[in-house]
Length: 203
Picture 1 (tube, rainbow, N blue to C red):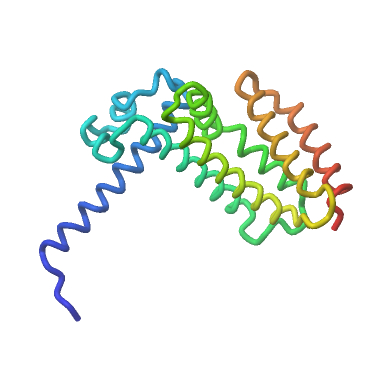
Picture 2 (picture 1 turned 180 degrees about the vertical axis):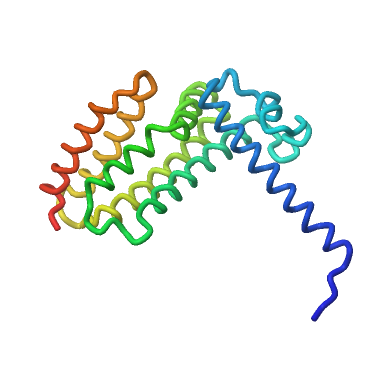
């Protein structure tokens, strides 16, 4: 069995601390975007919330765009993991539960944070290409997960568009939720969409 050198022993804790600092910065960036929007979310504000120095923040993320693009990528990964975690053994044909889970993805602080970044990207040229590329990748992943959980056969005419319509609807409900929490209306829409999916997707 090899001997671990003191340098290697020191390196491991430093790497752990570095990962922990990066994680705190990403979580703080998401929270700041959700609460204050793009204009109120500076690197200094995020660093203070994360409990690290501005210099430490810039060590991990040299620019503001780097920080918030990484934060939204982190959000996207968390959304995918959350959806997977809801159905670890698959959805077992319960399409109503899948529709509810997809809608929930778009009605929480993670979606709100992403939305603020989309708005900023619409007029921040440096940010636009990064966010556009990221969202395209996230969209493909979300669509793939939805198809799998809904047990949808995309080779059948109209099925792909039906699944995409579900995701667009979920995003719309998420936008509406920014202004008011209308849970009863949302529940009725989810119930109706689940019924439509049963009709259109079959078994």
